[in-house]
Figure 1 (tube, rainbow, N blue to C red):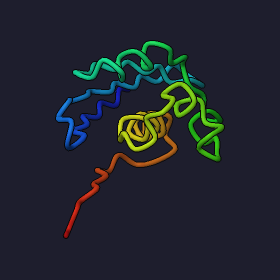
Figure 2 (figure 1 turned 180 degrees about the horizontal axis):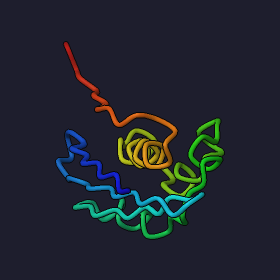
Figure 3 (figure 1 turned 180 degrees about the vertical axis):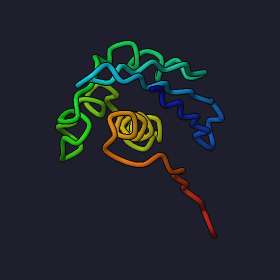
Figure 4 (figure 1 turned 45 degrees about the horizontal axis):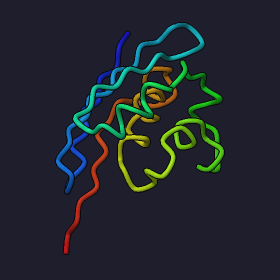
Length: 101
């Protein structure tokens, strides 16, 4: 099974495609991004377990730790959502952040 998520992050306009592949008790993440900062931290991601994906608070989650200072970038969150869906921990449903005013 494979999960693919496309992120259109907003103001920066740098599109990212996240692919999550289930490898048993882990999910392998590959990220193609127009953003050099995302490419840099994404290259450091190890395969993730369910425990990694669900780890909280944010500051202790490996994806946010590796992403570093990108706390408002939607790509780390989308990475976790893709992994979560691929591991069968959530259904594949779109997430939307919409400015209404």
